[in-house]
Length: 231
Image (cartoon, rainbow, N blue to C red; front, side):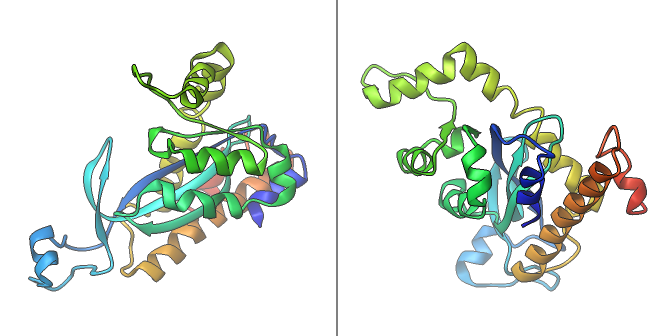
C-alpha cells in the first residue's frame, strides 16, 4: 500500500504515528432523525446511506466519517484510511486501521497518538500486541485502576506530552488540508460505496503527489500539490 511505501523507502519516520477521524457532510438535503426512524423519505435529494454523527467541533453532521492514520514527522502523509457512515464510532474501526499497516511499518512504530475517543482497554491491548503503545488523554478518578493510572502517568509525563503534542500539528491539519484540496466536504456523490471511493481516491492522489515531490527532492513535498492537481 502507498502509505507503507513511504516508510519502507525511509521517506518518513514512523516512530510516532497518529490516528483521527473527521465528519464529512453528505450531498443534498439532510434526512431528519424523526423521519429516518419512521422510514419516511420526505423529499428527493436525500442520500439515504448517510447517517448522523456528532463531532466535538462541528456538532451534528449528516454524512460520513473519514478514518485515518498518518505520520507525524517532517513529512506528514496518510498511512491508512477508511470511510464509514458518520454514526460509526472510532473504536470499532481502529483494529482494521491497524491491520492495514504492513509488518515493516508496525515494527517501526513506538507510539500511536489518538484523542479520547480511542480510550479503551481493548485498543490498548491490541496496540501492545502489535508492538506499540496507544497514547490517549486519560483522566484520574478516586477509584481509577492501577493499570489506567500507569497510562495516565505516561500521558502526563514530559515524554508523553512531547509525543502527544504532535497530534495537533500532524493529522488534524492533514485531514483538513485533504478535504479542502480535493473538495470532498460536502462529498460530490451519494451512497456509501461512491463516497468511500472518491474520498479514498483523494487520499491516494495526495499520497502520490507527496511521493512524487519527495522523489524529486522538493524542500516542501506538500507545497505544490494544489498546483499539480489544478486547484
